Length: 101
Image 1 (cartoon, rainbow, N blue to C red):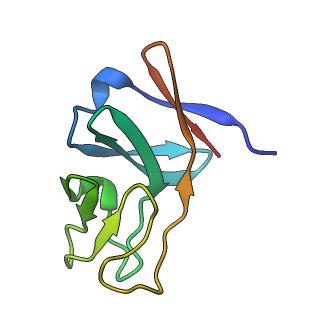
Image 2 (image 1 turned 120 degrees about the vertical axis):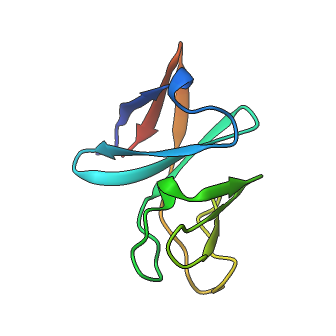
């Protein structure tokens, strides 16, 4: 059964940036986009790059290894329309960010 798990504090992820968190053994990329937070698999589908370390512009993260681009709100690749990463629901409680796994 899916459950929300605390991933980070709001203060840990400034707007326009991302980070990587481990939740239940999964590496999750967590992004702050204009006051909203989004979670997706951290591993790029191209060669496994760490998306949480990528460059975030608006809602698009660019993989730091080879430049593949993904929409953090949907997990869809801009480079390959067939490629999608899993995304996870996010909720805010107080000053904490929770991700549903």
